[in-house]
Length: 64
Image 1 (cartoon, rainbow, N blue to C red):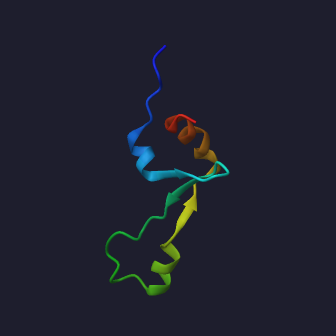
Image 2 (tube, rainbow, N blue to C red):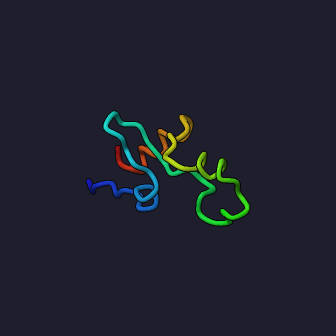
Image 3 (tube, one colour):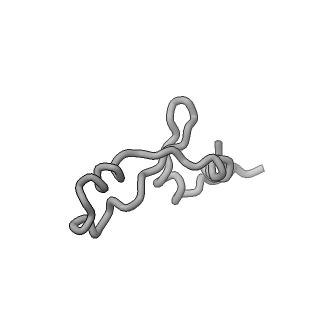
C-alpha cells in the first residue's frame, strides 16, 4: 500500500504544537494596512488556533 502524501498547501499554512494543537496565521495583516488602525493590526498579529470543526480534516490532510 502506498504512503499518504501530505497536502503541501496545508503544511505551509498550519503548524503543529508540541501538544498536538494546530496553529494558523491570522488574517488581515498582509496588505491595505495604512487604513487600518494600529490597535487593529496589533490584534491581527500572532498565531491563532484552528477551529474545532476544521481540526479533523486538517489532521487528515497533514497525515496525522
